[in-house]
Amino acid sequence: MIPIFSPVPQYETLKNSIDKALLEVAASGQYILGAKVQQFEEEFAAGIGTDHAVGVNSGTDALFLALRALDIGPGDEVITTTFSYVATSEVIVRVGARPIFVDIAPDTFNLNIEAIESVITEKTKAIIPVHIFGLAVDMTSLVELAQKHHLYIIEDCAQATGATWHGQAVGSFGHFGCFSFFPTKNLGALGDGGAITTNDPNLATRLKALRVHGCRPDNRYDHQESGINSRLDAIQAAVLLEKLPHLETWNTERRRIAQFYTKAIFNSELKNFLMPPASAAMTSLHAFHQYTVKVKSETPDARNRLQEKLKDLGVIAMIYYPIPLHLQKTHQNLGYHLGDFPVSEAVSNQVLSLPIFPGLTQAQQETVIQALEKAVPSVILNPSVC
Image (cartoon, rainbow, N blue to C red; front, top):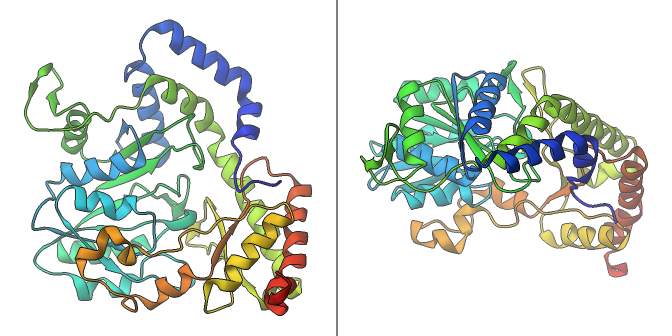
């Protein structure tokens, strides 16, 4: 069975150095924050091109703490995409603010920047762009819009570590860049982990306090405000330090796999039924956290049958995301309805992500395409077979 993702090839490649780093941390007796975390923060910030990075427990906490550090709370509104994982909107609710959703562009799956201005009010405080599946949002246009309306930008870079816009890394455009190091991410730990990047030293200092219950840096028992417990531990930092130098190589490998898939689809009858993701133009460098095609069907039935048929043929494909955020039960009190964001609703019925990760062999890539060539006719041309 070909998985949607496997961290094993990465570990096997770096086994000796990772094992050594883990044992060094174990022997040091310093497991929370400390020298390893500080070293990783410095190297990660340098890679993104920001002055500061603050390690935290997860990408979700990164978003939450970014909102807290900007004093966004009850009565405020935060604009974001409706096509994302629930963590993006969940954190807005957690600080007491209101998510304001916008639709996406059908080719990039990223938020439609042209739709933002019409929902800005006097309550709007920030925009959270999500670089979905590893493709950068048009940050030139978004920064211009945010500056025009004096709004904060908090980049959700959970799926886009290493992606760029006009040669500049995502996570370096906004007031904050929020990253996830969940094991499946482009830069993955051996458990949960996250980081927040910023160029503002005062915001960085506040984040460091908020991640340890709001305590002062010079007195752990002097709490100026309520924070949370969200510390990156030394073991994860040690693993990330070993992996970080390989990130660019791994992302290049992801792009090669994506290029192979796209060429194979366009050179076959599959192009009549599947639409590959938007190619990274000269303005951006795609990180290809996911390789997500659209099944050319208006209902989810064909897509769902295709997923099941691929599984029967030994290929795991995933659906990210079947329910847009504005239709999630957790957000039913916001007053959104089916039909409010037609592009996101249509895309959620069409998307299917194929296996893509460093270490996916050429033979496995060919098997994925062969499985598609077998599955697509049976479930789309002759759906009764499935």
